[in-house]
Length: 550
Image 1 (spheres, rainbow, N blue to C red):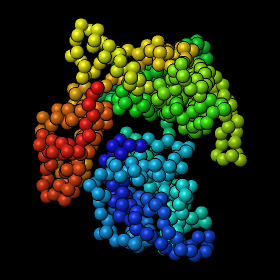
Image 2 (cartoon, rainbow, N blue to C red):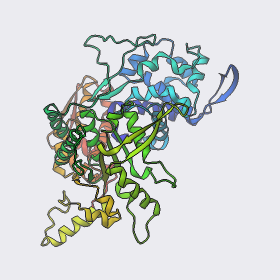
Image 3 (spheres, rainbow, N blue to C red):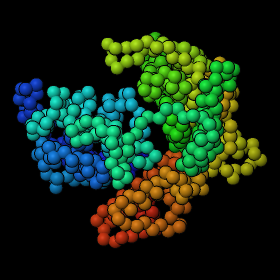
Image 4 (cartoon, one colour):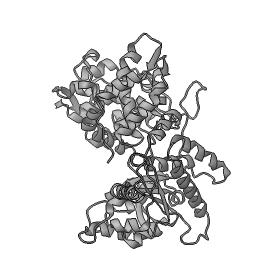
């Protein structure tokens, strides 16, 4: 979870939460609270303060959260500010408004832990403000009772299970964001589920997890949609899409020959969307999906997770449907990090590679699944129909290949700073320290391209997820209009290219630009926001930590 990968809406929400937290984080807060019907003097922990900041931010940010919170008049904003001993006017922005750095240092790890407590058996496609707040009902598992203390102090109605059963959490608990729209299960104010829907004016619709799509001609339009999203990676999208669809068709047959199923190795520079492309395809096709770094796992007898853990997670993603789970997709990232040197390699890496042989090839594993340790069921999980996509940046290997091509190509270096054509072969993977038998499992090789200046500019102009489109929507949400000079596109692309962090560098540049316009958008009187080259240069000239291309 990186700050720059979050949507504008989520960043605004977290910015407000960070402003609140920074205001109270060094403040000693004591309250008399009721704990198991005994009153005690309680000192707020840092985690308590972060949870309260996230909760309070929901009341202050325009959007769905504020509208929903307003429906529950038993939770009063004044009481929340009283609970943390400040007034709303006391909230100040964090120093230098460096939200990205503050998020990484102060909030990121706690937020990840809280979200995981809630979503151990659910799939969250995007982190939205609604998703964050809905997870706060589980903060007790993360080590804080602060919301329950607040509810008791101000006599907010709650069940025997505490504030976590307040209907506001039921309303929020299935919020997610898909295809750019917020969706949720609908609950009435008393917390009871209602299948009825409001009129078209209500953007909140019931969302159900997709089952596997019927793989006929109806799936092909998805490919065009995804390619419009990942401009510059059309070849990788095309190859991955067709291989995944073909694997699903093979999984429906009982007479599939050994070797027909694609086992995919995909390389490419960091920031070129390897995982994101795979996730987007699986979401469009409705296939259970799990992504994890292969470095999280170890073989039996070593410290680390067991490979079968990923099968349990996939089973949960498929809502306990074994047939669906066995046709799912597993992405192993950082695959090149289990390579080892034969002259001085790590035995643990070798052991993981050995275990992966059967895992990728199609073995049967007994796993225990259930809601808790007292209610576990043993099932047999067959991996022979899974689609495996193994990812690696292969940074050193790619650099050597492109350098070698430049030096032997009759001195031609015209592509030295732009996209380089190269191929990764099985022998390359063996040379870096992957076992021959394991490399033999891969029968399909794909790669994503580094972004050239032209491809970055094309993303900015044409991609359905262009950060400039997000910038425009943010401005329009404030009733204003954005006017962009034509030379701005090339200038932003150039600055993003110099950052050398892939497509996400466009978001970094746009975030810097947005910062310079926040005051004008929120409080300015002009109906038009003009983005010209001078604005772009001023916004990014002093703030970008440029990285050279070696």
